[in-house]
Amino acid sequence: MLKFLWRWTWRLVALALGAALAYQLWLLAQVWYWIDHNPATTAFMDARLEALQAKDPHARLQHYWVPYDRIATHLKRAVVAAEDARFIDHEGFDWEGIQHALERNYKRGKVVAGGSTISQQLAKNLFLSGERTPMRKAEEALITLMLENLMTKRRILEIYLNVVEWGNGVFGAEAAARHYYGVPAAQLAAERAATLASMLPAPRYFDSHRNSTYLAGRTAIILARMPAAQLP
Image (cartoon, rainbow, N blue to C red; front, side):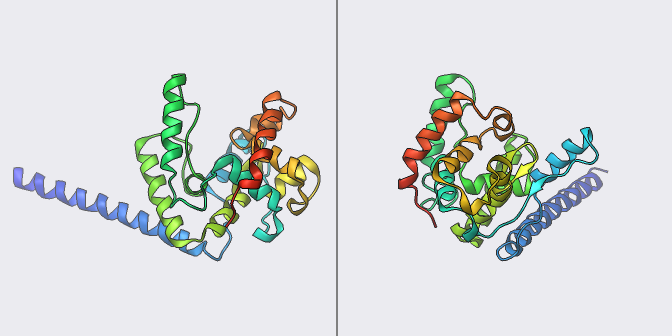
């Protein structure tokens, strides 16, 4: 009987490992495909649409894909300055930024900074839920490594700018530029680009609080940092 139980235990373990490996290979295939194909949607976009349609069955997302060259350089610099100043130098993880975030969180006694890079945020947006569990963070790390090893920094930034949430049902730079300013993403001036980058930590909140003093102050900081931001 004991031998029988051990045999089935190992079979179940082997099945679980096989399923986990198959899932990782599926993720890898998706990342590989997106090297030169544009994602039509993401896990995060699907989750937001589901939430919106629970309140209004006719709800739709605002999302328009535009190539890298049709996104204003001002916005690229603003996002890098705001979200990941060492974007072109790291390999997916900004260890200095993570340490700084941990120190800030310890001093404040709560989570006020995350230290996630653009690559990590893209990994989460493409595939994962909003949960903060060790398993989800481990999966995020694996996907980040896939992105960094298969894609160029330019491609990572292009996809990120096209899929990141920028308001209530607003996704991507083109939709954000139209939603807030009535212009295409290619025509964003420096201050408007800095304001959009300032919204990224809490885009739905700032969508309805566009005149907040925090947003104005953060915009000024990002404007000052933009000239030093390095782009791929």
